[in-house]
Image (tube, rainbow over all chains, first blue to last red):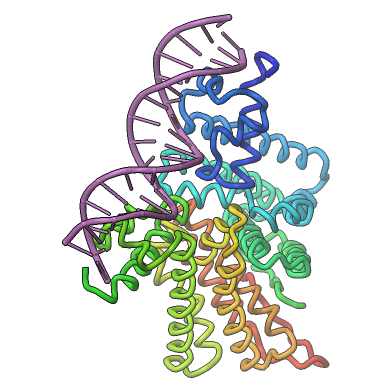
Length: 202
Length: 202
DNA sequence: GTCTATAGGAGGATAGAC
DNA sequence: GTCTATCCTCCTATAGAC
């Protein structure tokens, strides 16, 4: 319904359902049920289901960029910005326990389907990776910024997967605290003066 | 073909395809193609696809128990046994980069489908969790053994997810090295004498 | 225990009226 | 730009012969 923005409504409904149920498990009828349009009309806006997937990935990329830009301006220091990323696990905790991380689960599903768009979905990870890398560089870790970015991204994914399987809030809180402690231990490091860091002190 | 063990052949073929392609994306025809039996015959052995899933989960539980028992007898110390778990990421690296972790991806898919068997699949995680917890307890970490078990399980899942998305061997090696270093830093800890540990020194 | 044949339904996609 | 009607394929599941 509602003219020219039907396309956008389809994308947003698909975005939600692809996350909650998965790409394959979501049918046109499911999306149509949310949008309130007929299935037939979908093919005016998208020729195939894969085209909807492409639009959903593009939409997520744009939303993610917005979020990262928001963190950039709302937090004053690189450390606080990285903290925004870490605490996303708490903010989205309920959804994550029900459906996992939107990025990780989509990449996993598309990898299994050997879908043409699997590398496009991985660009969502690259967005976080590059942004985190920039923050670690700003923190004075120019040489290993990307390694640190991948490390914290890895932890976030691990917590999300186990949060879905165990639905254990205490576990999530504990691991978020560990990540905060790990972050606090990351100090500017020059190649000639490696600083001692401590991670797991609980 | 082959009488009474057709059931087992179905389970093993389904086990492989559920891992490689996912549960929903695997059809009876796909399984039949591997086993070399007709689709119709499947319903003599299993009444529904969900029953095949149940049998696959039971099969994986039993295979996992075997693997853990094997580590128990082949490695002499708790630390070496935990190392066996960590290095599974290297042993299965190629498969993980193509299809993710069999446990994590199945749990994620079933959670999204809100499938009745999702908690049964999570028992696979519990098997690792309890076994790892026992090893950490034997390492002298009786009070926080389960916390440590969940932490290393979390890391393993995070590495698997990013390995699938990025297919970056160097990343996997690096994180496995980090996990080894983390493990080496875990010392027996009595409640009154917390020991200093270091984690992230690379 | 295995087969062929087929029911019954859902999904993606198309055609054409309005 | 949206709708209804329809095609075709694939899937799960069943019936019944061998």
